[in-house]
Structures are given as C-alpha cells and as structure tokens.
Amino acid sequence: MDTQTLDIPAVTAHLRDKLPGFDGAVTATKFAGGQSNPTFLLDTSAGRYVLRRKPPGQLLKSAHAVDREFRVQSALAGSDVPVARMHLLCEDADVIGSDFYVMDHVAGRNFNEPTMDGVSNADRSAVIGDMNRVLAALHSVDVDAVGLADFGPPGHYLERQVGRWSKQYRASETQDIPAMNRLMERLVSEMPEDDGQRTLVHGDYRIDNMIFQADGTRCLAVLDWELSTIGHPYADLASVIMQWQLPAGAQGRGLMGVDRAALGLPSDAEFVAEYCNRRGLERIDRFGFFVAFCFFRMGAIIQGVLKRALDGNASNPERAKQLGAFVPVFAKNGIEALETDI
Image 1 (cartoon, rainbow, N blue to C red):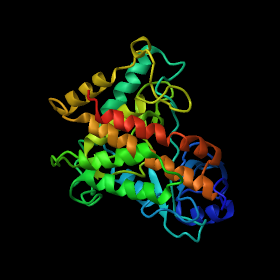
Image 2 (image 1 turned 90 degrees about the vertical axis):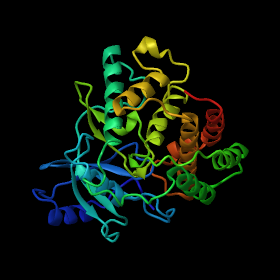
Image 3 (image 1 turned 60 degrees about the horizontal axis):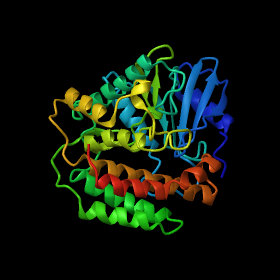
Image 4 (image 1 turned 120 degrees about the vertical axis):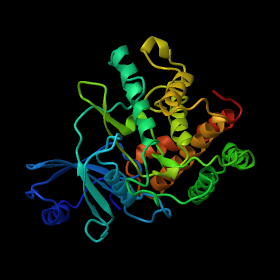
C-alpha cells in the first residue's frame, strides 16, 4: 500500500467538516523523516498544518499509536514542555485508510545531526542547553494535573519495556543477530531493582525530534511522541547519550570521534551533570544500564522499520534498509554500555 501520498479529496472533505477556519484548498508534501508514522505538510490558504498518520497495512500490536501522540501533546499544551497545537484526531480508518491527526505546523529550524553544521559555538551550546532544560521540564510534569496519570501501566518500567521490545524484535526478526540475543539476555539478568521513579517520558528524545527558533536557540516544539508513556526518566536521558555515542554524519547522526569542546558541545558527563542539577539529583547509579537499554530498544525499532521495508509498506523504503544495517551495531554498543558508566 502507498505510504508516500495522501487521498487529498478525502482529507479535504474531512477537514472541511472538522477543522474551524479550514477553507478546503489543500496541497500535501511528505516529510523525508517520519520512518514510523508517515508525516505530511498540508498547505492551505488558511495556514500550514501537519498531518501524521499510521502507515497502512498489517502493523505490530501497539505500534504507531497516533492516538497516544495526540493525547500527550494535547495534555502538554501550555506547559513548560513546548509542543505543537493539536487540532483533531481521526480514528476512522475509512477516511484515508488509517488513523491520523492534524496539528499546527511549527516554523523554525530542525537539526538532523547534533554537530549542527554552520551554527556558531555559542548557539550550539545554547541549543543543547535548552534541550537539557526541556528534558528536565518533561520529567517534572505533574501527570495527575495534566490528566495523564493513566498514560502508562504501573510496575517496573525497564522490565516491562525490555519484555515488550523483545517481543517486537522477535516479531520483526529477519535474520539471527547473536549480539542482539546476548544483549537481551543480559538486560534481563542484570536488571536493576525498581526505584519507584515514574514520570512522563518521551521515549525517543533527540535533537532531530525538536524544532528550534529560526533565528534563536530556544526549543519551540518536541515532536514524535509515539513511544511516550509513564516510565523512568533516566531512559530519556540515556536516549540522548546513546545517540551521541553513534558515528558522526548523516547515517549515525552521533558525535563519535568529534572534538566536542572545539564545537562548543558538552561531554556526556557534563550533559548528565546539568540534568541532575536541574532536577536536584546528586548522581545517577548504574546509568550504563539505561544506555544499554536505549541501544537495545532502538535496535528493535529499526529492525521493525527494516521488516516493513521488506514487506513493502515502509514510509521511506531505501532509508529503512540503510537503517536496518545498524541493528548489529546497536546490539554491540548496548553490550559495551553495560560494562561502562558515566
């Protein structure tokens, strides 16, 4: 089934009935990103919107939860966590072939890589500092006050997540990867005890999922909330560090081998220390386990992306196949993270 285009007449008819101020003239352009949920820019004479949909076709259970994305971003409106304004959620798959939601288009700049080529050292430092500020704000949200107390099940978050993503990985497995098998085994056997921390978590917090001011360094919106839930805050923090430990460049989009000080970028330890300071924490024990978990989860996610590409319903098939080659790398890095700490 086609994930590259939208049924414009169907979208137009639906928005005419549901979106105040909409005048019916639509053109749609697919964003290059959005591997999991195809995402489109809608240009209308009334303004610009973004439509994010589930991919059509057979999907893994609980994956591509656009309804959860819509709910959490709606709940965060007006908080210290910047999000786009939500407009409507359509759960009638008959309209365009899958569920979707529509939100404001947030004008600004997006950095595909943390090196932020062409940006001054001062601005790089400020962008990363605001990334840290927003993460601490996210983990300080009163989930009861914003109506998200039931947004995730109770119990041991890490244990639950390792179990969930192990099942997802097995369901999308296309070849045997010994390092991934070993990583899953060690995550189970070396699981830390539940310390009782439960906050709202993003699940895929990284710089390319954020929009910043076009001429400044403040974050205007955090995007891609598909993996959000109530969970352990250190998993989000570890997600940032995991990304930075990947190779630099368009493929890895990390900071491996980069002279960070020369670019005005913090070390892993400095970023973690700033986060701890913002949240009043003395230190984080066994942080390497959280980094290892993030490597595992991302490996399982891109394995699912690869499986969809091979099945013919990936959002960006060529990019999906390129990502799939990184699964063994994520597994190896996860094992190494278990044996190191910050």
